[in-house]
View: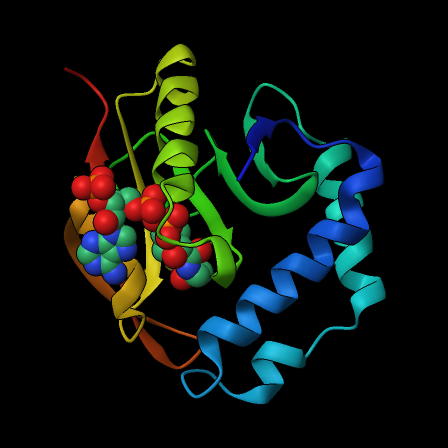
Length: 168
Ligand SMILES: CC(C)(COP(=O)(O)OP(=O)(O)OC[C@H]1O[C@@H](n2cnc3c(N)ncnc32)[C@H](O)[C@@H]1OP(=O)(O)O)[C@@H](O)C(=O)NCCC(=O)NCCS
């Protein structure tokens, strides 16, 4: 397995939209409603990725994992957090890796590159939200040093926030 890590290009938008949908289907079927999983068309997802990639500036970090020349995962983080009431100076919006290449170290590599980038931007802490029922992801986050610190209902389901201190 040959894995490379790189920033996205606008031409990656379609592959990213397809990968994102596939990982959501594999991860959330049975945990979230079909409406939430399939609520948006592929076209609108592609458009959203094009916008996200175009707007990628020094406040946003996206990194792709490319396995054997195919996009197999991504992470998306920002120094713009969405929750004013959470004490952190950055947020990880999403991390998604195709089922067939999970548990091969890709998630950890993407997370470590993100932490490096956040530190380079002067950040001291970061956090993310995960569905409480997504026990696989929570197991991973705990393994890589995340600490659960808050619970909140989003999309009608309980979510947990995990936090990382980036100093030291
Ligand atoms: C959660 C996810 C990002 C983890 O990435 P991954 O590439 O499978 O994880 P890695 O192989 O990098 O694992 C890193 C470490 O965590 C451990 N780990 C991975 N999954 C684990 C789990 N469920 N429980 C405990 N430890 C776990 C690995 O054994 C490894 O340990 P090591 O460093 O001692 O060798 C990935 O499985 C994924 O994308 N899942 C589907 C989408 C999803 O749920 N995203 C998160 C939404 S908030």
